[in-house]
Structure formats: C-alpha cells, structure tokens
Length: 297
Image 1 (cartoon, rainbow, N blue to C red):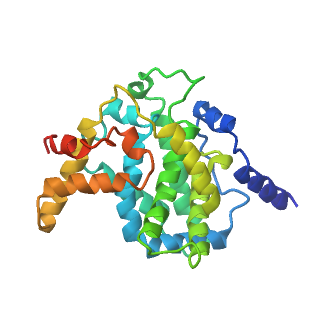
Image 2: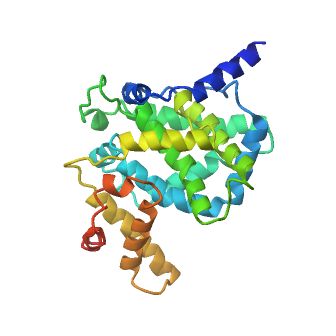
Image 3: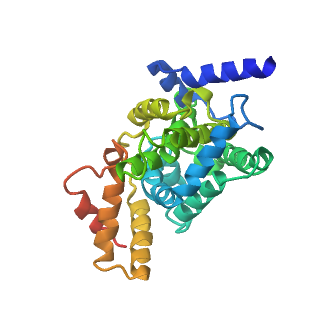
C-alpha cells in the first residue's frame, strides 16, 4: 500500500506544477541529490529508454556535444559560471568528456540492481558534484542573491536536463530516424529514464521531462526563462575553443573544404534545434557567421 501511495504521489508531482509562478520559484531553489530510485520508477520503461539510447547513440552523442552543450552556454544561470571559472576555455576535452559521462549515465544495464549501482549512483554523484561547486569561492563570488536565484538552481538545472534529454529526440525526429507514431514507447522510455536519473541528480519532480508531451511543454517554459540574452556577458573565449576543437577534428578526418567555415556553419545549424538559443548566445543576427569567422581559431 505504501509503495502504491508513493507511485501515486510521484505521478502527481510529475504532472503538476505548470503555473508560471512555479517556474519562477524554481530559480531560487537549490538542487537536492537523492539516494535510490523514485517510487514511480518503471523498470520496463527504463530498459526501453536505455535501449533507445544505445540504438541512436551516434545522433544522441553528436547532439549532446553540440546543441545540448551550447544550451548550457546560453542559459542565463549557467553561462556566468563558465565565464567566471573559465573552465571551458582552458579545457579542450570538456565537451567530449561531458558527452562520454552522459553516455555512461544512460548506458544499458541487464538488471535493475546493476542500474542502481551504476547509473543511479553516477547520477547522484553528478548532482553532489554540482551541489559542491556552488560552495566554491570562484562561483560564490558571482554574488547572486539566493532569494532571487541560486547557484545550480532548479530552473536552470531543469532546462539543462531537458537540453540533454529532449533535444536528441528533436534531432532524431527532424532527421526522420524516428517517428512519434512508430517509436512512441521508446521515446517515452528515454524520457522516463532521464526523469529517474534527474531524480537522483536532485531535480524537483514537477520539473522533470516525464513523457514527450510534458517534456515539450516544460522545455518551452524553461527556455523562455533561461535562454534569454545576458547583456555584458562575453562568450567569445568559449566560442573560440569550441570552434577550434571542431575545425581540428575536421582537419584530422581529412574533410574537404575550409575547416573554419564548416565549423562555424555547423555551430549555427546546431543552434537552430533549440528555439531561442541563437538569440541567447547573441548569434541570431545576419552577421553571426562573419562574427564567428573573425575569431582566431
């Protein structure tokens, strides 16, 4: 009976919280990493989600390393942290390491115990790491008023979770590799998997991806609040590093054409998968291509 009550309460949490006030309040709430899985976890859905991730790992990994990662740079409560710490500018392997870490996070397991001891544990550790980063001096020096917005707050964290959970689905749908009709159960499993993982990371239940319809609705609300321009915040150093890594990779692969131009055009195409992302990064104007090409990389 207690288990059933937990499932009912959990589902109610996942489906509630659709008011503007709820989204706004989330900006002043800290993440709270949790041990174990939620009472509403459905192992069959989790298995389908892991299988979906394995089947489409190429497109998913590419999306994570481009559009999803760019969204963290466009988020108004995440970008200042990157700028303050210069962690991206000084770490060329950051993007690849992030995609690899998420690959491990969503990697398939044979049984629920293995999922608990590996995937869920990694998710909780990721949340604990972010929780600890909020206490470091370099980040606390940003001087945010916690009554208005917290470091690694629920609103920004939910936006980033949706960027990594939903954006690959958007990419796969756009490329017609999957369809909502034929692959609905697999897509729902993938988003359920991310909801379970984000529970361990510390995300509030009413801000999780949950299912496709809910994820699309919440993603739109979160983008409206997080993917907005941040006046006075320069990301040129981060753009330079990302473009350099992309261009170097093309040269190593012997790709025909100008690697610098292809890197810039590839970045601009990736931004289009997330409405509002180009605007938040200051790259929505007609001169965006030339501005990026003017950077030294």
